[in-house]
Image (cartoon, rainbow, N blue to C red; front, side):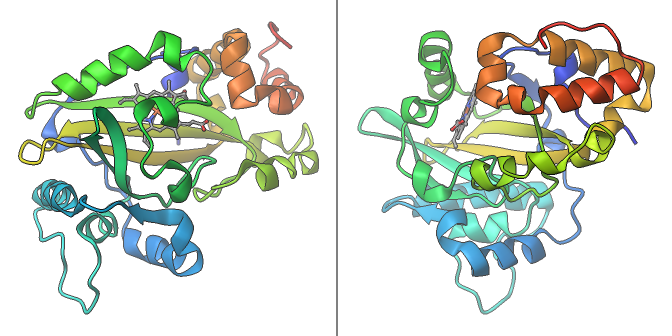
Length: 279
Ligand code: HEM
């Protein structure tokens, strides 16, 4: 089966890339019991996967209400747990849930459930502004920050926005809070095993307004596929090869592509993709 999302076919560089989607398309589902995965992570790494700030409970409850509406059921199932609203809602969906609220003139992250992080943790981002969250992203302040702030400011309640980004990683685990232990294992991969041991990692993100409390709910869903899946059709292989080889240098540097370049290139060549740029 080909990957569900192929954002490399559309964007080879950082982009805002937000597009409207219908309410029915908001949460993609597809995981039978998200709470099984998330509860295990909460038990083992509670400090990494959950965080809330004072005063965020009304926004959390409104966010949980939107999730309940989408699922057609109560966000607080009948159990003996007394979770904060955003956590109770997050246990019912595959997505990570992030509450953004305007505090002291800036859009800040006020609560989050983060069980599929791509190299960051809840305590690192809790309370941070959009500018601070994107500090590590090359060129974000110059190219995107003002526009993203305007989007948060002007987001209409009837609009749901979606964006997707992508990278390549040497882990099929959705819970990757830290990059170092993952990247340290890259030497275990050979050109012959690259198709199975490297993964495309797509983040599908959505954004919607919380009309009553004025905040915004940001969702992140991770889709992981062994790299070999991009080769399932000649068209998808060509699209991936072009995106990989033509990605601009700041994008490649930020995503750590040089670590994987010899392996990905060997994989592409083995699939018959011989044209080579940027290696
Ligand atoms: C909808 C508005 C947003 C846009 C357009 C946006 C855009 C971006 C872009 C272009 C990147 C670089 C990676 C990539 O996407 O290819 C990025 C990374 C990131 N974004 Fe956003 N972002 C948005 C909202 C948020 C929010 C609400 C959070 C809150 C958690 C967030 C957290 C991050 C983090 C943690 C990174 C990785 C930074 C790192 O490498 O340490 N973003 N974002």
